[in-house]
Image (tube, rainbow, N blue to C red; front, side):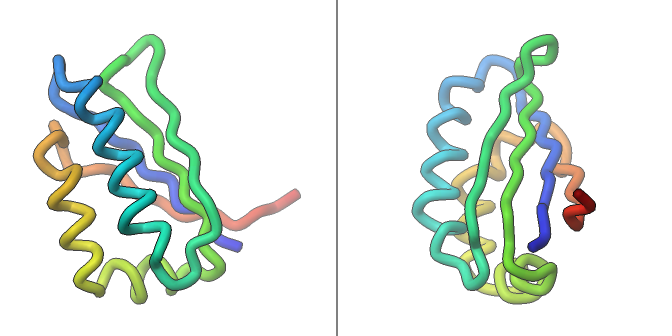
Length: 97
């Protein structure tokens, strides 16, 4: 199991729109990708334009190859990309304990 963590900063004043868009994008696009297991979205309290998207994948390659190199990635970015104030910072993690 691999955990993808995306640190997302959006443009101020668009939080309500983004709240809907990110859930829509995950449930209609990413959730159908090969190796998708589940997701969680966290919204910043002190920084209300900051979000953490956590997606569980069966393997690292399910995200980096199967999804990122598919047409679905473009669809996903079309749904959420205009909200980004900067490119998201994305890292992957393996479960330790």
